[in-house]
Length: 391
Image (cartoon, rainbow, N blue to C red):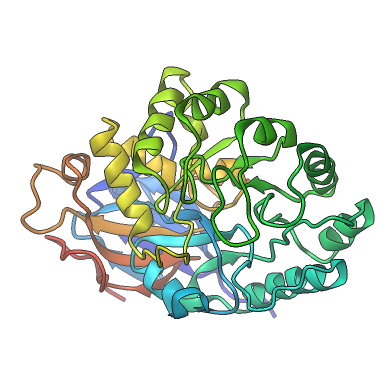
């Protein structure tokens, strides 16, 4: 039996951020989604807003695509034993994030390193986050760490089972470029995207991955190019920016100075569209529910980037790099949004000016697949205005 389309209407929007660097701000004051997908946006007078199942009065706040954390280390559900992190995914939702991407479930106690075991863990992790979404969060997980002894068939088996990611190359026993390159190519052949560890060792068992190995391996994303935790020397970071077209992932748990170097180099190359953001938590630095929003404010303020562009690092750029159906205000994309306003008493005349001065906005509502998942954030400072659910 067919069911009627569920219609979401968000009216009285003050500012629409698109997630697109080429057009970061859209004209309009209204947005419509049907069955969890974006249908239209613009001015309310020009749109069909009748018969909304959910009607939200934005009260003049800003709407943006939900933020994306490109680098996390989950384990199972909303629990990661590293630092005994419980309900950290729910807490991150209150930081404006609607989608998270695993760089490997490396903090699982007794993580299997034999081929059968590592494939089994990856498939299981992919399944449990497919079946369970903590507080509505979308978690792309099941990212195996490659080990010596893997053959092409193993990557086909993983892909056939639904695995779409590789964990950080270099966290396992494969630490030479030649072997890593072969496995990355096998993964790519079967539609599995790869990320490579960059910089000094992060946990026992990991090792230095320098620019030469990153370039030889040819992974899709340069994981924490600003180090996780230790960054590469400046000349190697600049070399990576100049010598390839891979995604440049900047993380909260890395070196802030190296982050700014990466940003400035990418800007000189006119390739800011390669910048994507992650937290690299939970880790020894803990977990940062506001990590992605803090990175937006930090890069905007210290990197002299307009806030509307810096937000693209946290949603649209990642969407395109990771080939996701969220992170952009685009017809047919998932209706995943953060509604936010300038924090009370924060400097700046507008939310964008305030963020570029280094301040966090106040989050008033989170929406995933057209469904309100949370209202006023328990983690951000209070905003001047809060959206209201009319029905």
